[in-house]
Amino acid sequence: MLKIESLNTYYGDSHILRGVDVQVPAATAVGLLGRNGMGKTTLIRSLMGYVKPASGRVLVDGKDVTGWAPEKMARLGIGYVPEGRGIFPNLSVRENLVMAERPGLDGRKAWTFERVMHTFPRLAERLGHGGQQLSGGEQQMLSIGRALMTNPRLMILDEATEGLAPLIVAEIWRVIGEIRATGIATLIVDRDYRKVLGHTEQAVVMQKGRIELAGTSAALAADTSRLGEFLGV
Ligand SMILES: Nc1ncnc2c1ncn2[C@@H]1O[C@H](COP(=O)(O)OP(=O)(O)OP(=O)(O)O)[C@@H](O)[C@H]1O
Image (cartoon, rainbow, N blue to C red; front, side, top):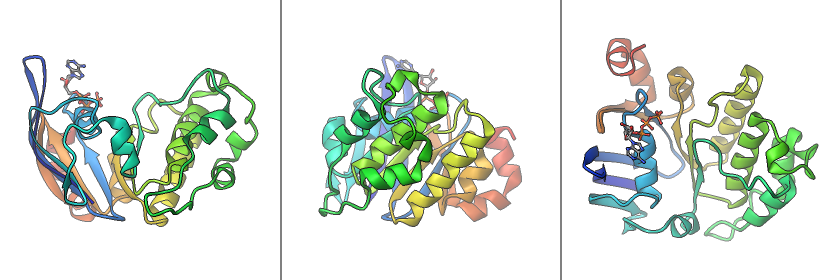
């Protein structure tokens, strides 16, 4: 459903993305791997409309949506959980969730407030708390919950487990598994390449703004020498 073709993005004079091609087929989980600073977040920000690519195309269901604003991309059914979380700190947990609620493009309401509560019991216990009163892990859950309330067809998760305690990290991976099982396509960035490869069907590895490796996650996981070369593991 998402196709990125020959994307080039600059920050000022710095050429960051250098002809990136990535596809996320419907209901498929794709991992985006690469060391720090290789361009993963820039790729996501370019496809979501936060940064304007200099050239190349972003296609959703074959339609050219390059340069569309983030709100318009969200209305196409793309849920984005940004690195560093995207919640409203001054609103309560309930308000953060309810304001995000909307049916999917096809009218589906698979994800409701009740279901998000069921998925994240911790949030259910803190409905009246303000976003800023939550722990880092709870904020991350709220950020994922907000994206799910939009009933997306594709979820983009950028470093959703970063800086969290092991138990919370395990909880987030469990939820990622649940999201996948409901047929939502996912694009997952995470430092834990084993977990990424274990939770995706396909993966790409970025190095200095280029896709250097791409294939099934199983094949990439088996090619430890090449993974080591690009991920430094
Ligand atoms: N707003 C910006 N202005 C200028 N350069 C930037 C900006 N954001 C990122 N960069 C640079 O672009 C390059 C790619 O960064 P990006 O954040 O996309 O990498 P990443 O693979 O997501 O890594 P990380 O895991 O560290 O976020 C880096 O060299 C970074 O320093």
